[in-house]
Length: 359
Image 1 (tube, helix red, strand yellow):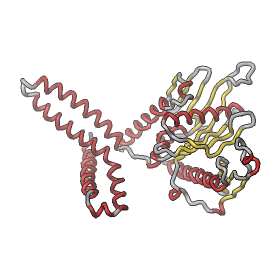
Image 2 (cartoon, helix red, strand yellow):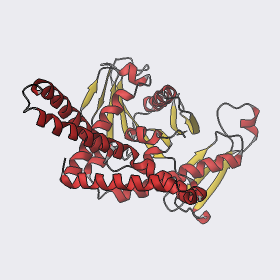
Image 3 (cartoon, one colour):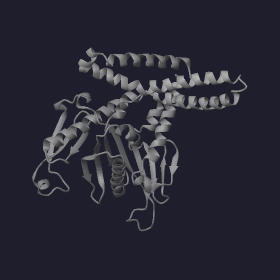
Image 4 (cartoon, one colour):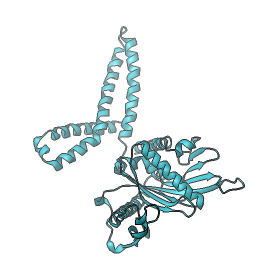
């Protein structure tokens, strides 16, 4: 491990000791604001400093074992302990490298998932529903709650668009790699000659951001329309104009919400989605000059940014960003997305480590 990295880790360890002392100070404990700030700081580098402490201990064991190699009576035992310690040292250094990677503050947040039908007509609309069920099952497996914000039915089954929200901590950090174009290849039920059709759906995953961090939206920039909800809901659907459509005039972004019975609640949900979209646009703009790795693995949500293909006739799923093909279509559509997400996350970390070493 580089001496410069060791020096930084030593400084972090010293800072941890200082913060620990401050957190036990009665004056700090009585100052709730200061106490929260220090507690957050302590939590941020607890894992890396603990790992560094174990690394130093193993390095010390290596030095002791190397000295014992010169003792004929202890040589065999020392050699065995030395090999084990060297292996542990390598593992700890790998952990430290990952722990030292820059953290995305949005990773710990919930998220919005937008799924839209693209090219492919009815087949694309049907696949929107299947993708939503896939994410719903994935969320269910993780004990996450997924709430529909907006849903737009297609004319012949399926959906033109679904917007859902997962408020559970860490959802964005796991699902952010799903943004992009999802291509489906299969034979539609209405296809009499057995030809395979190709359709595309677009998935956009955005972090759920606290209201105070959302970009300021001026009321004069908004056009707000009300309309009657469609779909299930009994008499309420046909008699109450509770659904909301918000148009952001400067960008042309349009958000609809009709999930709630209350017009005010629908408006609040729609504004939250609009704020998240505007923030995502700004974040993507700032990231254009950053490494191509992030743009490659974190899809921008563009319909032409094809990230994955689901081929039903061959029962395979291919992720084009990391050239991974799995013949486990039923499992993946059934919600076992980890088998795709984990390799992408590992690839992302590897590319970050390369960038870190180049710096």
